[in-house]
Image 1 (cartoon, rainbow, N blue to C red):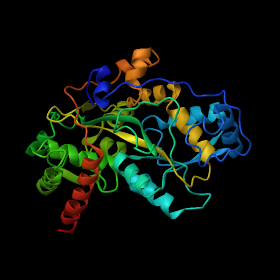
Image 2 (image 1 turned 135 degrees about the vertical axis):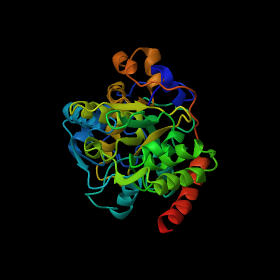
Image 3 (image 1 turned 180 degrees about the vertical axis):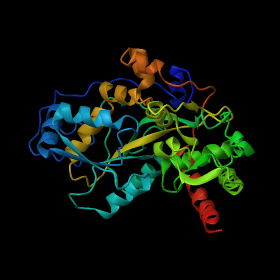
Amino acid sequence: MKMLPVAATALVVASLVLTGCSTSSAPTEDTPWATATSAEAGGGMDALVTAAQNEGTLHTMGLFDDWANYGELKAAFTEKYGIEIDNDVSMSSSQEQINVIQQRVGQERSIDYLDTGVSFAEDGAAQDLLAEYRPATVPDLAEGLHGAGNQWTSQYGGYMSIGCDTGRVETCPTTLADLAKPEFKGKIGAFEDPTSGELEFNIVWAMALANGGSLDDIQPGVDFFQKLSDSGNMTKVVANDGTIERGETPIVLSWDYLNLASATKLAAAGIDFEVNVPTDVLWSAYYAASINADAPHPAAARLWLEFIFSDEGQNLFLEGQTRPVRLPEMIESGTADEAAVAALPPAEGEAQTPSAEQREAAKAQLTTAWLEVTTA
Protein backbone atom coordinates (compact mmCIF):
# COMPACT_ATOMS: atom_id res chain seq x y z
CA MET A 1 0.00 0.00 0.00
CA LYS A 2 2.66 2.56 -0.70
CA MET A 3 2.86 4.79 -3.75
CA LEU A 4 2.91 8.44 -4.67
CA PRO A 5 -0.59 9.90 -4.77
CA VAL A 6 -0.49 10.10 -8.53
CA ALA A 7 0.55 6.47 -8.63
CA ALA A 8 -3.07 5.78 -9.21
CA THR A 9 -2.10 6.25 -12.84
CA ALA A 10 -0.19 2.98 -12.63
CA LEU A 11 -3.53 1.29 -12.33
CA VAL A 12 -4.90 2.92 -15.44
CA VAL A 13 -3.57 2.81 -18.96
CA ALA A 14 -5.45 5.79 -20.29
CA SER A 15 -7.11 8.80 -18.72
CA LEU A 16 -10.84 9.10 -18.93
CA VAL A 17 -13.08 11.75 -20.42
CA LEU A 18 -15.68 13.25 -18.11
CA THR A 19 -19.14 13.40 -19.55
CA GLY A 20 -22.14 14.70 -17.62
CA CYS A 21 -25.23 12.57 -17.12
CA SER A 22 -27.90 13.49 -19.60
CA THR A 23 -31.06 14.96 -18.14
CA SER A 24 -32.38 16.50 -21.35
CA SER A 25 -34.15 13.44 -22.75
CA ALA A 26 -37.87 13.44 -22.12
CA PRO A 27 -38.77 10.76 -19.58
CA THR A 28 -40.70 7.93 -21.18
CA GLU A 29 -43.66 6.30 -19.52
CA ASP A 30 -43.12 2.82 -18.15
CA THR A 31 -39.50 2.77 -19.26
CA PRO A 32 -38.19 -0.82 -19.17
CA TRP A 33 -35.18 0.01 -17.03
CA ALA A 34 -34.27 -3.67 -16.86
CA THR A 35 -33.05 -3.38 -20.45
CA ALA A 36 -31.82 0.23 -20.50
CA THR A 37 -28.13 0.32 -21.43
CA SER A 38 -27.60 3.91 -20.23
CA ALA A 39 -29.48 6.62 -18.39
CA GLU A 40 -29.99 8.47 -21.65
CA ALA A 41 -31.42 5.39 -23.34
CA GLY A 42 -34.01 5.12 -20.58
CA GLY A 43 -35.15 8.73 -20.84
CA GLY A 44 -32.48 10.64 -18.92
CA MET A 45 -31.34 11.04 -15.35
CA ASP A 46 -34.56 12.65 -14.15
CA ALA A 47 -36.55 9.66 -15.37
CA LEU A 48 -34.05 7.27 -13.80
CA VAL A 49 -34.19 9.01 -10.43
CA THR A 50 -38.00 8.96 -10.44
CA ALA A 51 -38.14 5.28 -11.36
CA ALA A 52 -35.53 4.35 -8.75
CA GLN A 53 -37.33 6.30 -6.04
CA ASN A 54 -40.56 4.55 -6.97
CA GLU A 55 -38.79 1.21 -6.46
CA GLY A 56 -37.56 2.55 -3.14
CA THR A 57 -34.98 -0.13 -2.36
CA LEU A 58 -31.58 -1.38 -3.53
CA HIS A 59 -30.44 -4.92 -2.69
CA THR A 60 -26.70 -5.48 -2.23
CA MET A 61 -24.46 -8.12 -0.67
CA GLY A 62 -21.21 -7.93 1.27
CA LEU A 63 -20.77 -4.15 1.15
CA PHE A 64 -19.18 -3.89 4.58
CA ASP A 65 -18.97 -0.35 5.93
CA ASP A 66 -15.17 -0.46 6.27
CA TRP A 67 -14.54 -1.98 2.83
CA ALA A 68 -13.59 0.78 0.38
CA ASN A 69 -15.66 3.27 2.44
CA TYR A 70 -18.93 1.62 1.44
CA GLY A 71 -20.46 2.77 4.71
CA GLU A 72 -20.23 6.41 3.63
CA LEU A 73 -21.27 5.59 0.06
CA LYS A 74 -24.44 3.81 1.18
CA ALA A 75 -25.35 6.58 3.60
CA ALA A 76 -24.78 9.31 1.01
CA PHE A 77 -26.86 7.51 -1.62
CA THR A 78 -29.78 7.04 0.77
CA GLU A 79 -29.61 10.65 1.93
CA LYS A 80 -29.44 11.96 -1.64
CA TYR A 81 -32.23 9.87 -3.14
CA GLY A 82 -34.25 8.52 -0.22
CA ILE A 83 -33.66 4.94 -1.39
CA GLU A 84 -33.02 2.36 1.32
CA ILE A 85 -30.19 -0.13 0.86
CA ASP A 86 -30.76 -3.69 2.07
CA ASN A 87 -27.22 -5.04 2.39
CA ASP A 88 -26.96 -8.79 3.06
CA VAL A 89 -23.75 -9.55 4.96
CA SER A 90 -24.40 -13.27 5.46
CA MET A 91 -22.27 -13.85 2.36
CA SER A 92 -19.81 -11.63 0.56
CA SER A 93 -17.34 -13.35 -1.77
CA SER A 94 -17.40 -12.80 -5.51
CA GLN A 95 -18.47 -16.37 -6.18
CA GLU A 96 -21.23 -16.18 -3.58
CA GLN A 97 -22.67 -13.11 -5.29
CA ILE A 98 -22.67 -14.90 -8.64
CA ASN A 99 -24.29 -17.94 -7.01
CA VAL A 100 -27.05 -15.79 -5.51
CA ILE A 101 -28.14 -14.26 -8.81
CA GLN A 102 -28.11 -17.73 -10.38
CA GLN A 103 -30.17 -19.27 -7.59
CA ARG A 104 -32.66 -16.45 -7.01
CA VAL A 105 -33.87 -15.77 -10.54
CA GLY A 106 -37.26 -14.08 -10.42
CA GLN A 107 -37.09 -13.59 -6.67
CA GLU A 108 -37.55 -10.26 -4.90
CA ARG A 109 -34.82 -11.23 -2.44
CA SER A 110 -32.16 -11.42 -5.13
CA ILE A 111 -29.49 -8.73 -5.28
CA ASP A 112 -29.35 -5.78 -7.67
CA TYR A 113 -25.69 -4.75 -7.56
CA LEU A 114 -22.56 -6.89 -7.53
CA ASP A 115 -19.06 -5.90 -6.44
CA THR A 116 -16.85 -8.76 -7.60
CA GLY A 117 -13.44 -9.54 -8.97
CA VAL A 118 -13.06 -8.97 -12.69
CA SER A 119 -12.67 -12.68 -13.48
CA PHE A 120 -15.96 -13.41 -11.69
CA ALA A 121 -17.67 -10.58 -13.57
CA GLU A 122 -16.37 -12.01 -16.84
CA ASP A 123 -17.83 -15.39 -15.91
CA GLY A 124 -21.16 -13.79 -15.04
CA ALA A 125 -21.23 -11.87 -18.31
CA ALA A 126 -20.45 -15.03 -20.29
CA GLN A 127 -23.48 -16.68 -18.68
CA ASP A 128 -25.72 -13.67 -19.47
CA LEU A 129 -26.25 -13.06 -15.76
CA LEU A 130 -25.26 -9.38 -15.90
CA ALA A 131 -27.03 -6.45 -17.54
CA GLU A 132 -25.40 -4.27 -20.17
CA TYR A 133 -25.05 -0.76 -18.76
CA ARG A 134 -22.51 2.05 -19.14
CA PRO A 135 -22.56 4.88 -16.54
CA ALA A 136 -22.51 8.34 -18.11
CA THR A 137 -19.22 9.48 -16.56
CA VAL A 138 -17.08 6.63 -17.90
CA PRO A 139 -17.49 6.60 -21.69
CA ASP A 140 -13.83 6.05 -22.54
CA LEU A 141 -12.29 3.67 -20.02
CA ALA A 142 -9.15 1.83 -21.07
CA GLU A 143 -9.44 -1.76 -22.23
CA GLY A 144 -9.43 -4.09 -19.26
CA LEU A 145 -11.39 -1.68 -17.07
CA HIS A 146 -14.78 -2.63 -18.49
CA GLY A 147 -16.39 -5.64 -20.09
CA ALA A 148 -16.44 -5.93 -23.86
CA GLY A 149 -20.24 -5.82 -23.77
CA ASN A 150 -20.41 -3.25 -20.94
CA GLN A 151 -21.75 -5.83 -18.47
CA TRP A 152 -19.24 -4.65 -15.85
CA THR A 153 -17.13 -1.58 -15.15
CA SER A 154 -14.23 -1.26 -12.74
CA GLN A 155 -15.01 1.21 -9.96
CA TYR A 156 -11.99 1.19 -7.59
CA GLY A 157 -8.73 -0.64 -6.96
CA GLY A 158 -5.66 -0.84 -4.77
CA TYR A 159 -2.29 -2.47 -4.16
CA MET A 160 -1.48 -5.71 -2.38
CA SER A 161 0.13 -4.91 0.97
CA ILE A 162 1.56 -6.34 4.18
CA GLY A 163 0.06 -5.12 7.45
CA CYS A 164 2.16 -5.62 10.58
CA ASP A 165 1.70 -5.04 14.32
CA THR A 166 5.00 -3.38 15.26
CA GLY A 167 4.42 -4.17 18.92
CA ARG A 168 4.48 -7.91 18.28
CA VAL A 169 6.87 -8.10 15.31
CA GLU A 170 10.38 -6.76 15.86
CA THR A 171 11.13 -6.13 12.18
CA CYS A 172 8.13 -6.00 9.88
CA PRO A 173 8.42 -7.73 6.49
CA THR A 174 8.72 -5.44 3.48
CA THR A 175 8.73 -8.14 0.79
CA LEU A 176 6.56 -11.17 0.22
CA ALA A 177 9.71 -13.29 0.18
CA ASP A 178 10.41 -12.12 3.75
CA LEU A 179 7.32 -14.00 4.93
CA ALA A 180 9.21 -17.29 4.72
CA LYS A 181 11.79 -16.18 7.31
CA PRO A 182 11.77 -18.24 10.53
CA GLU A 183 11.20 -15.19 12.73
CA PHE A 184 7.67 -14.93 11.36
CA LYS A 185 6.59 -18.39 12.51
CA GLY A 186 3.02 -18.31 13.81
CA LYS A 187 2.53 -14.66 12.90
CA ILE A 188 0.95 -14.57 9.43
CA GLY A 189 -2.83 -14.60 9.28
CA ALA A 190 -4.55 -17.16 7.08
CA PHE A 191 -7.01 -16.16 4.36
CA GLU A 192 -10.18 -17.58 2.86
CA ASP A 193 -10.48 -19.82 -0.21
CA PRO A 194 -8.78 -18.06 -3.17
CA THR A 195 -10.92 -19.93 -5.68
CA SER A 196 -14.03 -18.06 -4.53
CA GLY A 197 -12.73 -14.70 -3.28
CA GLU A 198 -11.05 -11.99 -5.37
CA LEU A 199 -8.76 -10.69 -2.61
CA GLU A 200 -7.49 -14.16 -1.82
CA PHE A 201 -7.05 -14.96 -5.52
CA ASN A 202 -4.85 -11.88 -5.86
CA ILE A 203 -2.83 -12.72 -2.74
CA VAL A 204 -1.82 -16.03 -4.31
CA TRP A 205 -1.05 -14.37 -7.65
CA ALA A 206 1.14 -11.76 -5.96
CA MET A 207 2.94 -14.58 -4.14
CA ALA A 208 3.52 -16.24 -7.50
CA LEU A 209 5.13 -13.15 -9.00
CA ALA A 210 7.40 -12.81 -5.97
CA ASN A 211 8.53 -16.42 -6.34
CA GLY A 212 9.34 -16.90 -10.00
CA GLY A 213 5.80 -17.03 -11.32
CA SER A 214 4.27 -14.81 -13.96
CA LEU A 215 1.00 -13.56 -15.36
CA ASP A 216 0.84 -16.93 -17.09
CA ASP A 217 1.84 -19.10 -14.12
CA ILE A 218 0.20 -18.84 -10.69
CA GLN A 219 1.51 -22.21 -9.46
CA PRO A 220 4.52 -20.72 -7.59
CA GLY A 221 2.04 -18.76 -5.48
CA VAL A 222 0.28 -21.95 -4.43
CA ASP A 223 3.67 -23.52 -3.67
CA PHE A 224 4.68 -20.52 -1.55
CA PHE A 225 1.42 -20.69 0.38
CA GLN A 226 2.11 -24.37 1.03
CA LYS A 227 5.62 -23.48 2.22
CA LEU A 228 4.28 -20.90 4.69
CA SER A 229 1.67 -23.34 5.92
CA ASP A 230 4.09 -26.25 6.31
CA SER A 231 6.65 -24.12 8.16
CA GLY A 232 4.02 -22.84 10.58
CA ASN A 233 4.66 -19.24 9.56
CA MET A 234 1.05 -18.96 8.44
CA THR A 235 -1.45 -19.67 11.18
CA LYS A 236 -4.79 -21.37 10.69
CA VAL A 237 -6.59 -18.27 11.96
CA VAL A 238 -8.20 -16.09 9.29
CA ALA A 239 -7.11 -12.53 10.00
CA ASN A 240 -9.45 -9.72 11.02
CA ASP A 241 -9.22 -6.70 13.32
CA GLY A 242 -10.12 -8.80 16.34
CA THR A 243 -7.43 -11.42 15.73
CA ILE A 244 -4.87 -8.68 15.18
CA GLU A 245 -5.81 -6.97 18.43
CA ARG A 246 -5.56 -10.27 20.31
CA GLY A 247 -2.13 -10.93 18.83
CA GLU A 248 -3.23 -14.02 16.92
CA THR A 249 -2.41 -12.65 13.45
CA PRO A 250 0.12 -9.80 13.73
CA ILE A 251 0.96 -10.00 10.00
CA VAL A 252 -1.83 -9.64 7.44
CA LEU A 253 -1.87 -9.77 3.65
CA SER A 254 -4.60 -7.60 2.15
CA TRP A 255 -5.32 -4.65 -0.12
CA ASP A 256 -3.67 -1.47 1.07
CA TYR A 257 -6.98 0.32 1.68
CA LEU A 258 -8.23 -2.53 3.87
CA ASN A 259 -5.04 -2.74 5.93
CA LEU A 260 -5.09 1.04 6.30
CA ALA A 261 -8.69 0.93 7.52
CA SER A 262 -7.59 -1.66 10.07
CA ALA A 263 -4.66 0.54 11.09
CA THR A 264 -7.03 3.40 11.87
CA LYS A 265 -9.25 1.19 14.04
CA LEU A 266 -6.34 -0.51 15.79
CA ALA A 267 -4.72 2.81 16.64
CA ALA A 268 -7.64 3.45 18.99
CA ALA A 269 -6.58 0.31 20.87
CA GLY A 270 -3.00 1.54 21.07
CA ILE A 271 -1.73 -0.76 18.31
CA ASP A 272 0.72 0.56 15.73
CA PHE A 273 -0.25 -1.36 12.59
CA GLU A 274 2.30 -0.60 9.89
CA VAL A 275 1.28 -1.00 6.25
CA ASN A 276 3.77 -1.60 3.45
CA VAL A 277 3.47 -2.34 -0.23
CA PRO A 278 6.00 -5.16 -0.79
CA THR A 279 9.06 -4.03 -2.70
CA ASP A 280 9.56 -7.32 -4.54
CA VAL A 281 6.25 -7.20 -6.39
CA LEU A 282 3.82 -4.38 -7.10
CA TRP A 283 0.43 -6.01 -7.61
CA SER A 284 -2.75 -4.09 -8.17
CA ALA A 285 -6.27 -4.94 -9.21
CA TYR A 286 -9.59 -3.26 -9.74
CA TYR A 287 -12.93 -4.65 -8.68
CA ALA A 288 -15.89 -4.77 -11.04
CA ALA A 289 -19.29 -3.12 -10.59
CA SER A 290 -22.18 -4.85 -12.31
CA ILE A 291 -25.95 -5.15 -12.33
CA ASN A 292 -27.93 -8.37 -12.04
CA ALA A 293 -29.70 -8.89 -15.38
CA ASP A 294 -32.69 -10.08 -13.32
CA ALA A 295 -32.41 -7.31 -10.73
CA PRO A 296 -35.58 -6.88 -8.65
CA HIS A 297 -34.91 -3.12 -8.64
CA PRO A 298 -33.38 -2.38 -12.06
CA ALA A 299 -33.75 1.41 -11.91
CA ALA A 300 -32.26 1.67 -8.42
CA ALA A 301 -29.36 -0.52 -9.54
CA ARG A 302 -28.64 1.78 -12.48
CA LEU A 303 -28.95 4.90 -10.35
CA TRP A 304 -26.49 3.37 -7.86
CA LEU A 305 -23.96 2.88 -10.66
CA GLU A 306 -24.42 6.47 -11.79
CA PHE A 307 -23.82 7.56 -8.20
CA ILE A 308 -20.68 5.54 -7.49
CA PHE A 309 -19.09 6.69 -10.77
CA SER A 310 -19.99 10.35 -10.20
CA ASP A 311 -17.45 12.79 -8.75
CA GLU A 312 -19.17 12.44 -5.38
CA GLY A 313 -19.08 8.65 -5.42
CA GLN A 314 -15.51 8.43 -6.68
CA ASN A 315 -14.32 10.87 -4.00
CA LEU A 316 -16.03 8.74 -1.35
CA PHE A 317 -14.09 5.71 -2.61
CA LEU A 318 -10.98 7.90 -2.49
CA GLU A 319 -11.67 8.80 1.14
CA GLY A 320 -11.51 5.06 1.81
CA GLN A 321 -7.92 5.18 0.45
CA THR A 322 -8.77 3.20 -2.67
CA ARG A 323 -7.80 4.31 -6.16
CA PRO A 324 -11.14 5.11 -7.85
CA VAL A 325 -11.09 4.32 -11.54
CA ARG A 326 -11.68 7.95 -12.58
CA LEU A 327 -8.91 9.31 -10.33
CA PRO A 328 -6.41 10.31 -13.06
CA GLU A 329 -9.07 12.30 -14.90
CA MET A 330 -10.37 13.85 -11.67
CA ILE A 331 -6.88 14.91 -10.60
CA GLU A 332 -6.39 16.55 -13.99
CA SER A 333 -9.75 18.33 -13.86
CA GLY A 334 -9.34 19.40 -10.22
CA THR A 335 -12.41 17.50 -9.01
CA ALA A 336 -10.53 14.98 -6.86
CA ASP A 337 -10.36 15.57 -3.10
CA GLU A 338 -6.80 16.88 -2.75
CA ALA A 339 -6.42 15.89 0.90
CA ALA A 340 -7.59 12.35 0.15
CA VAL A 341 -5.19 12.12 -2.80
CA ALA A 342 -2.32 13.24 -0.58
CA ALA A 343 -3.22 10.56 1.98
CA LEU A 344 -2.85 7.68 -0.48
CA PRO A 345 0.01 5.36 0.49
CA PRO A 346 3.10 5.38 -1.73
CA ALA A 347 4.37 2.56 -3.90
CA GLU A 348 7.21 2.23 -6.35
CA GLY A 349 7.34 0.83 -9.85
CA GLU A 350 4.67 -0.13 -12.32
CA ALA A 351 2.07 -2.71 -11.46
CA GLN A 352 1.60 -5.65 -13.81
CA THR A 353 -1.85 -5.94 -15.31
CA PRO A 354 -3.14 -9.29 -16.58
CA SER A 355 -5.39 -9.57 -19.60
CA ALA A 356 -8.85 -11.09 -19.36
CA GLU A 357 -7.48 -14.27 -20.92
CA GLN A 358 -4.66 -14.44 -18.37
CA ARG A 359 -7.13 -13.94 -15.51
CA GLU A 360 -9.29 -16.79 -16.73
CA ALA A 361 -6.29 -19.06 -17.23
CA ALA A 362 -4.93 -18.24 -13.77
CA LYS A 363 -8.30 -18.89 -12.18
CA ALA A 364 -8.52 -22.29 -13.86
CA GLN A 365 -4.95 -23.18 -12.90
CA LEU A 366 -5.55 -22.09 -9.31
CA THR A 367 -8.75 -24.13 -9.01
CA THR A 368 -6.89 -27.31 -9.91
CA ALA A 369 -3.79 -26.53 -7.85
CA TRP A 370 -5.76 -25.47 -4.78
CA LEU A 371 -7.77 -28.67 -4.80
CA GLU A 372 -4.53 -30.64 -4.72
CA VAL A 373 -3.27 -28.60 -1.75
CA THR A 374 -6.46 -28.84 0.30
CA THR A 375 -7.02 -32.54 -0.32
CA ALA A 376 -3.42 -33.65 0.16
